[in-house]
Length: 387
Length: 92
Image (cartoon, rainbow over all chains, first blue to last red; front, side):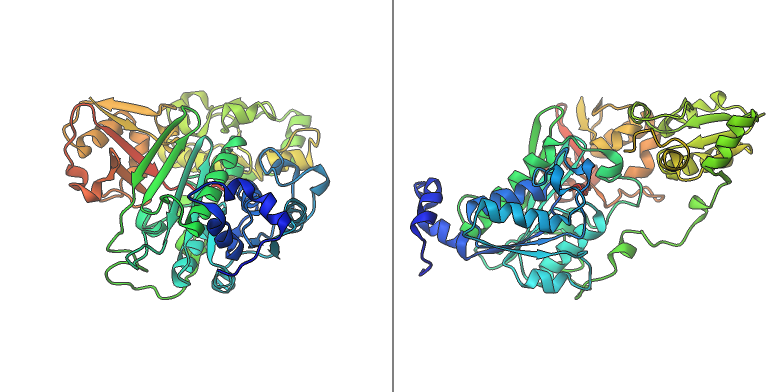
């Protein structure tokens, strides 16, 4: 290969060059390679830092988001002075300062069915650091359709997963992909996002670093990648497992009878635009201002908080805590002879709890606090912490 | 006894427990023992017709049960069975 290195580069990458299995050939492959990183959040932060430091020649970053205070607990690409800036802009500045020998390209946009294939087509490989099922299936499908490997990691609270999908194997076939592992996404609401469910800040650091490692291995051919395997890490117990991932004959893109030849509507696929059903019919609600007025004028009522205890520890409006998960077994704690206001963080869980209590237990005196404690904080009690 | 590893997203239905053990001769038996003790978890594992949902995978050891005998896969006394959920966090 005729890719030259400057003296500065040779010195910079010397710890790679002296690994016998890696050497200057591995470094040349990195310099010649291009990687698209989708999402520059918790996973994207360490991933981008290590890919840039390692000398991947061209790195694209896709993100539409702005840096927020609550990102800094784990998104180590950013600092206090970046709050409010576009993530791609702050990330590019940091990465260019880290390694001036590489090219950073920014795509300050949502990654959608309209641009996914074109974006991925411009790179050798994609690394998925997104935060929702719709985009994960989109990244997977676009990578398959464009014939690119997809290095995957995902996290939730204390758990992490990592794998390599659609890698070109020595026999000319492609390794399994995300749809082989999970043919369909869970229904909305079953698995909360990190914004709702939380994540220990170090965990994306660990999984994003593993992702960077797998990207480097795919590019250089050094070692054995996680193609055909799913790595699992439970940070709470420090247990790790590596499971086999096999091709699924009914995969709609890569199975025995492929039925999907282009991208689809992933919001619809993930049930995010489903028509309202009886299950999510509206419930009676009350605005924060009205509840505040009831409190002021002494109108009898009871407030029930269906959030988890750790959420109540961040902020509370004094309601009785009955987490949604145990509401059905706690009905004797809920009065029927006075109006009961049920609340959660944003109003979704409390509406679900009300429907359950009305349908299965005949309650008729329940009101949902519209917008949850977030709306209450905004409109009535700004000194409460938001989360 | 076979041991079932419960992933975080489903632990709200097991009172927070990450492990469930029961005497069971196959995967179906173990999952039914779980749903008998924690009925709230049932709709997250099975659809209305009793078929396993496709956004979770069941592994015995390091092998997915579809590559074995499905839910009829026999379990030895100290087998480790895992429920692997789809998770999507990358954290915005």
